[in-house]
Amino acid sequence: MTASPTSPPDRSFRVVAPVIALCWLAVFFDGMDVNIYGATMPHLLADESLGFTPALAGTIGSWTTFGMLIGALAAGTLTDWLGRKPLVMGSVLLFSAGSALCAVASGATVFGAGRFLSGLGLGGLMPIGLAIVAEFAPPRRAALATGLMMTSYHAGGMAATGIGLAVAPGHGWRWVFWAGVLPALIAVPLVLKWLPESPGVLFGRGRTEQAYAVADRYRLERPGTRQAPRAGAKGRLESITALFAPGTRWATPLLWTASFAGLLLVYGVSTWLPELMRATGYSLSSSVTFLMVINAGGIVGMLIAGRTADRFGPVKVSALWFVLTAVGTFLLRAQLPLGAAYVVVFVTGIWLFSAQVMVYAATSRVYAPRERATGLGWVTGIGRTGAVVGPTLGGAVLAGGNAGLGFTTFAVTAVLGALAISLVPLAVNSRGDKVRGLTPATDRESSAPGVPPSRGGLPGHS
Image 1 (cartoon, rainbow, N blue to C red):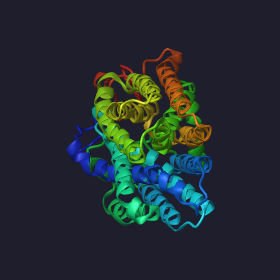
Image 2 (image 1 turned 90 degrees about the horizontal axis):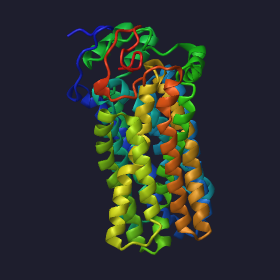
Image 3 (image 1 turned 30 degrees about the horizontal axis):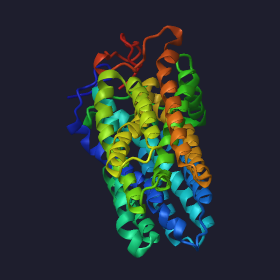
């Protein structure tokens, strides 16, 4: 079947499964590397040679997320110039190298440099992976595909926790970070051989036949000038200024705010949950296990959120999930019986992580294809300021000896996220337009290039 710009072919998960699987694998290692720090935190604090304190550990966690901020902003802007595939490989190599540097670190400064280097790669990978999935996934299952890919992040988090529990007590925390070098040996060769380049990027470079071949192979709409990124430095600047074009100029800062709140929660909780639970009165082994439990909840949540968002829209799901996260984190203030605490942590994980991922799903529908990678890069990049604040805030709260205040702060942040994402449709509609792509995918109608969708679909959205 030959694809054409005016009648995109039917697509199924079976056809694009290899692409989503490669993104899943790369983000699995992303999640493993991020969570290695939290999983080894008790052992890092106990290693007197490093000189870690809770406050210093929180600061180093923020160095990681500051690197993520830079990596996300750079990747979101450069991916249309350098291509998706090279940046995926480069990102994996960066965070693997950072993990190796941590493994050989003799003090906090070198360790922090390793975490910053890891952050550059970790931040760069996420928006690229999201852009690839948004481009290749079946349109009516875009949110589900995003959720499926993001289950890998939490599977990686569980793997990190398992490695930390199995390896660190007997062999030391350094061997856990050596495990973080595996992505360079496993994922990079597979991505190099099997991951296709974006048809839009290929078309924008003038490689039209290759672009059409990839589009036809994966049953995508053949790219045209509307899908192709703008070329040159001027084009990259225009992609950024397009985020503030009429119809999105108010939605953009709201998406940034929601991402800030979501990532503050994700990285604040991932870094400090074990220590917060210890300060509440639980044992060391139970406190570390809570990190595995909340990531298990995250996996379940991604599947629930993806399917629900494809039916009701990602904005409604994200807002509700943020509210439920606020309830769950506030409940953790109390020292519950161990079994009840595990249940609350698991259920909170269902809402917490997928609330943020549905912000990404909404972002993919707000921006046109040629601005999508840039939009995702800036939403994740600006959101990383929340990831910078989260670990530092958690460390400061723990240094003051008030774990309950930490959980309350996370609850208030979740309410902020709910408010910001709830206002996005109103911002997009500020000129009286329909809800451009934020309605459920099953309610949208396709349109030919150059013709505005009739029921709120994003122009050129695929």
